[in-house]
Image 1 (spheres, helix red, strand yellow):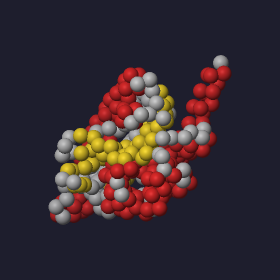
Image 2 (cartoon, one colour):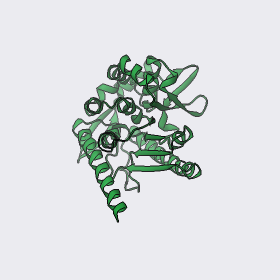
Image 3 (tube, helix red, strand yellow):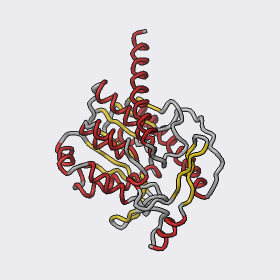
Image 4 (cartoon, one colour):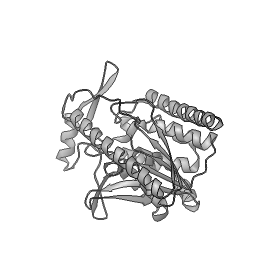
Length: 301
């Protein structure tokens, strides 16, 4: 049983799309399970349908307005680096409405429903492929995995949306008596879950460099401090997930093929830039291609 796992990583998901395209179209890999966290959950339904061109066009055209119904920050480009500042008006507006987060991401839910039709959902549900997204249940203090086989169209679209809701910047969702948020808060790379579900070989796309090369810029305001703090926490969660995944694989005779980003793509994955994301998609494809060629050369020697 073969599985593809795509980690969280915001706008860096474009790189994962390129890697997945190569594995599906050139390597002709057939998957039994696609499992995604956060940005990964946005990709896997379309990958399951093998509608690569469709998801690439959608993914590389996403803007802040595509995601936020109330964007809590501003973006400033200086010296080639994108930094975020507080949009005081929007943040105050959210608090006056009694919301618990700085911003709202209702536009993302609309985008998900517009990009995945009910007919496509039905096609996926009837097929043998299992599509699973990761969410964090803050009320019960646990990670949950939501399979397409267990939900109707509207509910599954909501779970994909919830998996992407990077709080406190995006919507905190109350569902079935619990508060839910971004799956990455609990599990950035769900390799262990893939193996528990029977995977014997896992292609894990990690939206981070294998070795840390990053020295973050000093925090300029409360928001940049928050994003730096969360990035630090998520990096530690990701590292922990990978270690557990390797341990689980060793004890279950499973194989993991890791696809890390070869360079640091961005220091702020909340910034969505079409030109940049188009470049990342192409670089993901080329990276997977070069990695495959290197593996073939090693096998020959």
